[in-house]
Length: 250
Image (cartoon, rainbow, N blue to C red; front, side, top):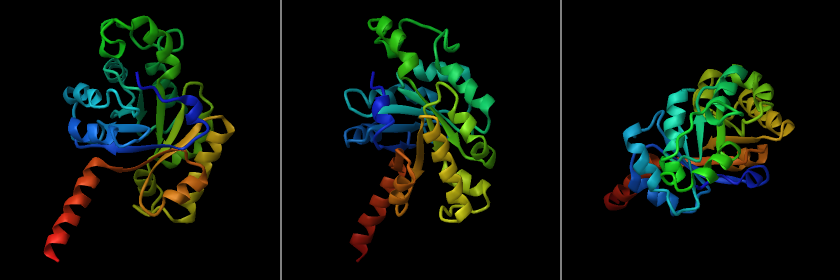
């Protein structure tokens, strides 16, 4: 398993990118690029549950840990995704302590949680590594909760205090919309919200994450975000196609 090293998570910047085309080939390219983690997006992306196993296989033998974003805190979906071999799950729109606790409960085997146990699954190398996986999964699996609403920002300290939550990950576009500044990451009240999330993480020994964008990378790193994603496979294709066409039109 390509788990995230949680010692590095708490002390280093871990770089990731979003993958929303549903393409194993694009994921294979990203996995070989050198990212620390990859976000396979089943919330807004084109891929489906039927595509997931091939997308996870595309990460195999790389150093990039595959994190999967699902649509909600859904125990059945968590079980399917983790059994398929994900290193962790990103839960969108977590706005309360209760939702964050449910996310942790779904992710962890008893007695820490209520995740169902199976033997012959891809995550255990179809049973060959079951004992090792069972012993390490609850501690090593990554629980990432997204902070995307004013309510989530207000509850950030309490969410960060929950045992089992690893990363509070700001979804900046949703947060900007919900704070009344759609797509603008520069207003003081938006930056103050980011600072509150980072401070909540620092006070509780957790890690702050964000999907940054060009021009904001250094600011977000300076604020203290360490689990940082930039770009996506779809944007890379769009930008590359536009650049190629522009070169020919000149």
